[in-house]
Image (cartoon, rainbow, N blue to C red; front, top):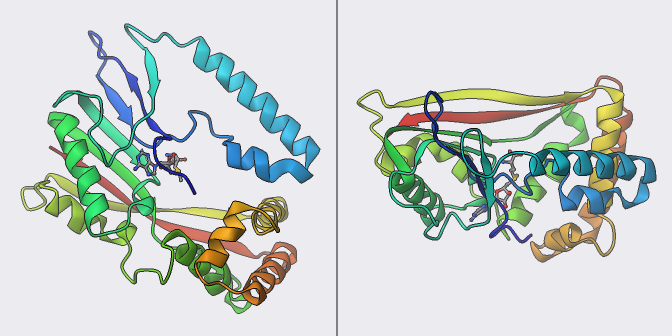
Length: 261
Ligand SMILES: C[S@@+](CC[C@H](N)C(=O)[O-])C[C@H]1O[C@@H](n2cnc3c(N)ncnc32)[C@H](O)[C@@H]1O
């Protein structure tokens, strides 16, 4: 999966009386939620694809109407958070980053990203991050925690997943990056994303089956990580079973960090 240079950051320009000042959302993806991968995965669902395309179009029009300069403006820019961003030191009052650190394996990458964020934060500026730590599928007997969640992690990390991945180390990483945890300038919080209901399950299963189809780069990433054809077939079978199991559900606990520079 190509992740570099895809999503740095929209900024709202500081303006007189704006309590937020300058806000950076780092790793926003394409700037609108229906990403290219969703559109590609939706090739077998024309109606869903049409709705996504409509929505993308409406969002693009809305984005085009947002001022790029002055009060209330939003600017979309590409960049790599692991390299020096095109912002001077102390540019942002707030930096927000959602579901990005899981793409940055330890030990070096998350610290490089945090150092770059600290550089562009103003003194007293706030950093907020949110990252899914694990994925759990219920009922457990379908074994999707292993077949889907663990294999996904293997593919992402190109081999055996780390027992303590970046998402679970965020409190320690903030401290290492220089945020003053002992001085009360770091809050560790948590939340969860939950999916349930027959339609949501069917949508997730349809998306997973699309991604694991012959020729899809996602499927290839599984094969490259040493996941066998047999396991892929087992996963597809279990995903289908989960979708049709009454009251089956999914939960992903998230680490939510808030820190002041
Ligand atoms: C799972 S998406 C999260 C998108 C969005 N923030 C959200 O929560 O829905 C991960 C995002 O991290 C971005 N990303 C990963 N590594 C990056 C890097 N080194 N520099 C910039 N963006 C990166 C990807 O391009 C992608 O937009």
